[in-house]
Length: 200
Image (cartoon, rainbow, N blue to C red; front, top):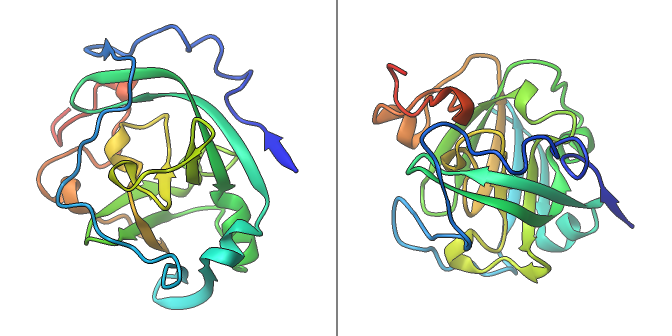
């Protein structure tokens, strides 16, 4: 059963509005911090940690057996492009964390990826169906250059937060910078406030 939840109706007021400084594109651009990793689905694994304690590990087969949902949303990149009306399919982060027996009412997640990329996000920004691990885009399996087999989707923040090739999630008490945050990008990244860099 597919849940058609967050942003199908709740985001209608924003669907045709661009955040400040953005321009509209009609395709999904490919931007990465490094080369596209080659990931064998037989070896793919998603690990969930409570700080440093491993709580749960999902193989690809187990991941696909979790509750599947569709996510209708607009997305906004820090490089100033925006894309309206995208459709993703995957598993909401709160469904994954519930299966991992973690208290995720507060704190942050620190996401690590195949290829070495990392990023940080407040827990409040993934709860209530605001964040997903997606394996499909516009009804097709997610292609490797776009983050396949699975990537994070947190569309109300700049898209560098929606990490490609997700490998693990640490639920942590104190915030810490990820890859781009360590190079001066904003720790939060709200497109509507133009939080691109540390001083914004």
